[in-house]
Image (cartoon, rainbow, N blue to C red):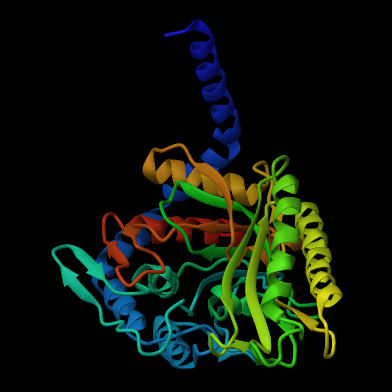
Length: 427
């Protein structure tokens, strides 16, 4: 092999290691070791395994209740009953549909949020019946996120059954609107200005225990609609055509976006859905598209957003310049999604604790990454937050072939227990 190629591969490998290797400070490893040596924690770990069949049963029950975003009420009711049976001091549903169970702390100076989301990407009419083949469960939503909210219930059961009392209040929640155009409206409500202050946020919504999300990928989503009078393709020829304007807008945007995203923090764009028109012999009265733009950097997100808005105006102007009769076209640029970005430092206590726990339970090196989850909101506000995995093994997320297998699934709940207790002040 050419020596230059060898050196290049070595350099790439080194860069990859530097980018992803994380150092766990000894003090946090010692905290985890000390906590897991306590007799009551060992007993709680055993209890989590003892109720494994109950946790799976809860997961199946919750999966089989349809819950598209903005329609989580029925699943929320079932989840609320589970929290009550698990021993919550009180359970309530807030103004937007988040279901919350409180376990009171001994000091009650702060509140820690532990949650999974209730909604799924699947519309009503989807067959969500859970089917088992061998050791694997199949159903849309079985992992994302019925497993997560079943873990929240199991976590509360474990603390109640083993009388584990922390210093601070803990909210065990099922949140609404995490998926798609739900746009995180559930957690946005929890972290809104003037709301009950939350000192830390633990979201359960990922894969393996060692896969830790400490950054939020921000996103902006738009529905852009170009509008005109519409008419016969021959008889009304010369009026403005919304499809032409939309096409011109896309053509104006793509070269700018391509150049903007070549360097710096990863930033993406997608013209995702197109619609409009009534027949082949009609000039459409509207042409619309859904657009998704994402970045790990809030500044980059603002930058590509400015390019996008400018391009939409350019497309409208170009079509209006060539119309021969009739009124000018108009454009409606509707923001349908706005998820802020943010990052929790790998050196911060919550992330260090999460890495130390994952390493202790699995023996694997933890990996930090950014994603788009409920914790985006806390990240953006500088509130300690992390998204941890559901445990077990799964795949086919957001598809009709989604599956989950209970391979050491109890470890996910043990991780959540240790992290929750450390954040809530367990002595």
